Length: 409
Picture 1 (cartoon, one colour):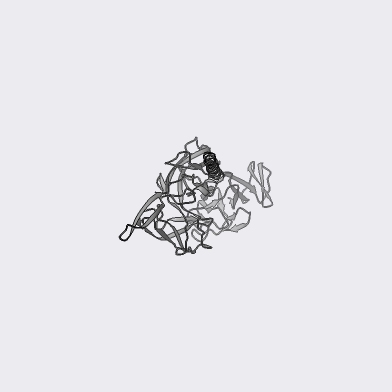
Picture 2 (cartoon, helix red, strand yellow):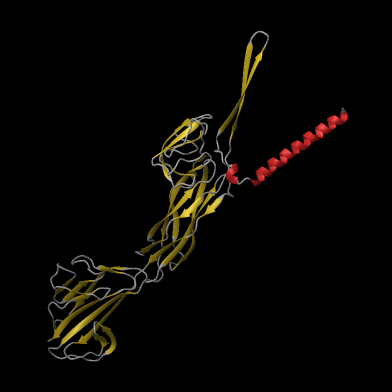
């Protein structure tokens, strides 16, 4: 009997050891997402019932225990918004960057949000970033889809475990929150009804999912984080300020659970105008110095001479050699009327493609006017603003021209 008992005990111990090994193996091979595929704050209640006869009647007794599922912290995911570009318009020109942050834990967790500059150029390192919304730290709700014979998920109604409290919030998910359910795109919450205890909460959605979610799908809150970026002060006009930055989100309950977005690059462009005037003698061509060929003719900066009654044609060149646009561009040219007469109707504006646009001398019917002793021409674009409005815009790398004539007295 003793030997038999020892053998039975050995077999039992061997079987128990094998069970422990199997449990350890399962715990090792299961990924975190599978181990955490139950919503935190879920109330697991197990009740036992005893029925017995005490000699006089059948009696009953009940006993239950409740286990609460705990939070498994996981770093959120962060998706950067688009790179942006805007003209530099002065100190601390502003841009707003967006980042999409999505919870990945099995329940609500709180995250600190930290934007940071990675690099910056052409602004003496005076650019800055700051969090606009939401305030940091931010709490992101999360849960897990459940289903049974009486809780059948649809494209607009999903079921998750109660967080133990009867109200209109479940695991920090409430009306108007944005949720990522399973692999679907984000949808907005319409209502939440949480019966409390170990019950099942109901979440209705404002728009339908492509298909009904499955039990075990994560239900994760999504927030859009906005970061304000200021350019600082430009160092050299005509070049661009470039600021690169990212966003980091770190769990406040487990600092090892942190995520950093890819870098976002903001470019603040700057225009740089070049302005040069040339002349040619239309009546008697004269070869001067520093020439420019335009429209089939050659104009000069110096060395052109003329006689009485000869016609001179002036060419004004406006070039934007910067990285961004120049705006409100208006050319004014005062004529020496004591020595020459303006040739009526001679103003021609040539746009960035060198297309000719003859202008009238009237003050308010197009982009040009002649009011002795000054020519005024709005430039930039195919159709510059009509006077007296401010001038047009010349984009980076483009050139426009203005031509007019006078006759020497």
